[in-house]
Length: 303
Image (tube, rainbow, N blue to C red; front, side, top):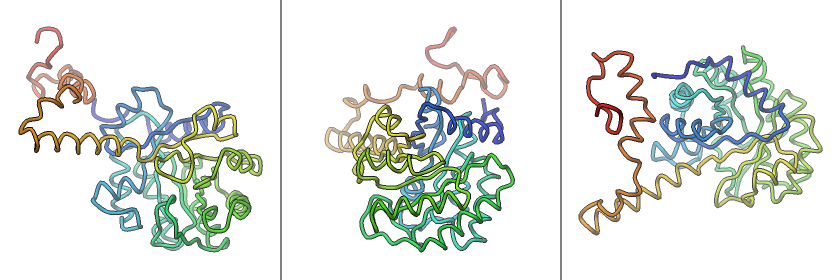
């Protein structure tokens, strides 16, 4: 009922445990607070909050147009709706090192378990697009040092994402990742690896965990959990999968309504009212206070 009873501090501790575990952790990308209910119910270890998805939900492209306030607010709404640790995309940190420091503290206050900060120029581009530009190593490491220095909870995970693989090649990505780890990054997010061997070589070159981004229509093949675990990857994100699936279903429904004049043929594909009520826990609210909730849930006893 209401929001999670697991504190942000407990979620951060859990995130640290997951990163240290021998088993790989999977973090599907949530695009609404409600979608976290399904992620948690399915037994996933955590929730990812994509900056691209947050921008798309505002009707914007993923090119650095969202603000820290917008990201922290929506990410906080998502994080408080689940018991799972949530990792959020903080893009380039929303400015210079002092802005990066403020970003980390705002995200801590919003209840996030960690964030990743990338080494692109601002405004940035989606990591799997061509034509990216990255900052020099000094600037990239300065961002990470600022983030690490600013956090008040030592368990808040500061992850460094590098996009240099698509600009200067794999060897440059390894060199950049090592510098970011030396600057204090807890985890490295090497974007747009070409194949499993690159993930394996990246993991072997570092003393910190690495993340794999399994986004559809990107530069990397959609490897399985076992393949990535065998390559030395510690966690996987699926940043846009839920949003893409949901928007595809919405588009099909709207086409049906427009062409048929009714949604009847699509009803069987919808989440039922009973199932929706289960996800938002109407019954729990009823048990808490029948004066607040005073109607029956279809499919439950006495209905």
